[in-house]
Image (cartoon, rainbow over all chains, first blue to last red; front, top):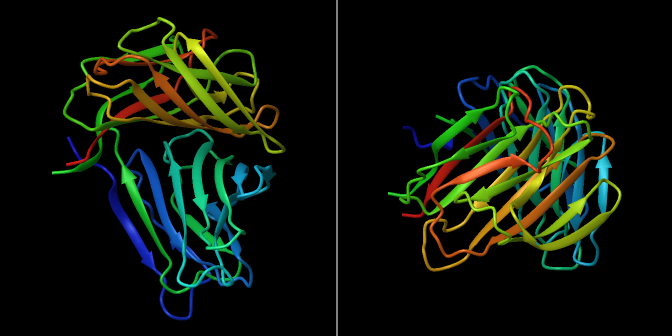
Length: 165
Length: 172
């Protein structure tokens, strides 16, 4: 019986940053996918949204957010992790995201569960619980991550496969 | 050696049942993680999924939940449940092909000294009744958990292709 959370691929952003982090040619041999992100956007603000696309196309999502002063909820015409840290947040500070995609190779629409947070030693911060939907029956073969601006150097993303047997 | 997400058991629904129970769960892990990806057959926008532990249907479960529906947030708390609410998945009235995801963590499930807690995330993006929720549940029993069941809240079956898997997580 295998231990799971098998690493499929990983990306560490080098100097100069990266406009996207892409996992392609994802094998269909696992049951679920997990993407773990440690990220900082180069956007000139305190937070940058994490945008998730599957097979090159976006989906929809609903978020419940904590900002430190309120609990807003919003719906989006894309799969958005709200948020990562960005250029004017505390230096050397990265946000985190955890993306779970069950039955990614199945023939139903794909449901995603995202938990995301920015980090900032100040008042502007976002922590979000996100329900995502990719209305496509195709197997997921690629995961594309983008943010506001670029991903800053030292941002990382790791794609894992989980098998249910 | 620590291990993560070791599959213990899995079930794929065929559309004719409303629940599944995993029994004889080994005590050798630290936590249990359950992943359910499914859709209910009941004629509603959403269907509640609950868990029952050790085949216990007495009113020893309580929960607090935080929910966002895309425009506002809400919270609710209940005690005296006969099952542990985990979250909502799409029902028969949701957009065709849409499945929802529930991820539940049963912490320190095999000890025999403390009440058992569970943390769950529900994800349902159906247009009419969409919601993302986070729920903390309490099973007021010190018994080690050896059986975990998943069921609709008395409303219909899970459609064919719905799946639920339990994984073991070891801390050392």
